Image (tube, rainbow, N blue to C red; front, side):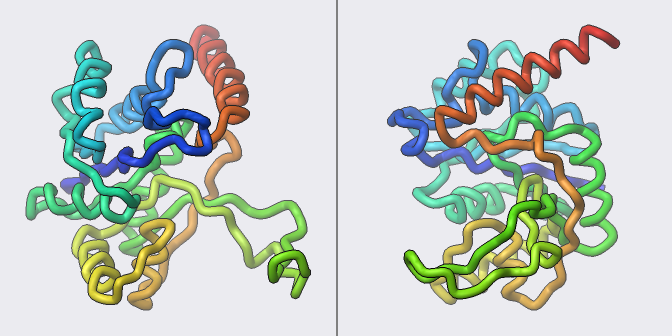
Length: 233
């Protein structure tokens, strides 16, 4: 079964407080994107990994990947201003025999091989699957500064990546969104608009998305734990 990965990485790190792309921010001397790609490359079921970047970031990423053993599997494509544009650019490059496509955030470097395998298995079974976390806090629906309702926590999940879809299904979802002029915050919402069910697989609170400076402190802590556990084996 031919499975490809797309990593949208063309956005700027506005909340990170830098004009540099947030995926290129260093985590212990290595770009966050490289840490993320190492995790994806550890999955033997994934073939090529398409990274959607701004054209001006190509050289920096190529340099960062030069010493990585998986570099031949990584293909750079020019992304767009929005996540949806970048994923569409990756989809356009997929070989026609690609059966499933996995989409993962460039700044989620703590995804595990186990989570990747679980969401892949779920997508192969149902056509569409994502990782998600149960909500533990009380969730309020609001209108500006006023509470308008309280949502049932058992019916809420926080979406994570990877998100995996049958390629033809995701292509149809993107075509519909483009025709409708619709922009979604993730790939799953585009598939949901087709009326197709999306399976949710429980993710991990360690599978964080690094988007602001405080996240880097947590990332350093998690990385130190990973290294300690690796050294203990």
